[in-house]
Length: 362
Ligand code: F6P
Image (cartoon, rainbow, N blue to C red; front, side, top):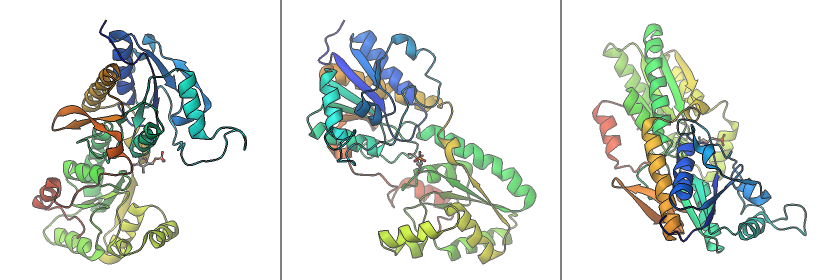
């Protein structure tokens, strides 16, 4: 058996779930246990389980049949340990971060592997700054983690969203309607942009390009004049108008709190008001996150998981596993922390969308 610096490691999944998490857990644990003989401790429900010391020693039998399963066998939560400075059981008890450090030490962990998005990897970086050994993996359907070309979960969500857009085409065409489809992505437009291109959206609205409803109306009316009887409008959940983009953070939050329904509904109302075209809305929601991962995500997550185990073996701590120019590498966690990757305005895919006649709302 090859030598390993890490003898015992913890593993948790945190933040919104994403297809490929189980493939990644399997990749880490199978390699860690079978190749290096490590003990792998799985914490329940993300950082919550680490705070509450809820864990189980993972057994090889647990990884059979999970490759194709959505969700996460460890459970997840949006727990943010650094947020609460008060004791977990009252004023005299340890804070969440102190509890994490105590549990990590008591279990004699050599490293903690955290599978998650921006929040998870930022917490991982902060725990590393507190003296823990941490390795991160980039998971999210939003694809908004810096320092990696892609995250696992994104391609599955992309396929789900593309399939939904394909299905909307026939009903849009039958009824001569404008179909607005709202997709996830948080503050980044990757999912909207890629599914919009793959599904042939006529308009794609992204958070990165504030939209002008008059420009959208002109585009839809022009389509009508050229004989097109329906249109598909893909709206990323973080999309915003030109007017909203001019607001400060507080005013924007207030405007959004007062808005009726989500952004897709507002865009549909605005289109109807501007053009008189009958519009309908589909909010795809959690369907994008649930269910079985596509092959790409299974392969990527397996690759990331096994790479993490190899990093555990060599003691390459304080890093997030990433894909850079088709190579799996480790990037310092503190370069990932507190940053999000949005679509750059000179991204080639924006040009592709425009070249095929898509209106990006500007
Ligand atoms: O993290 C991915 C994501 O799916 C975002 O696209 C979305 O804004 C968010 O999670 C919603 O998830 P939840 O309701 O679990 O907070």
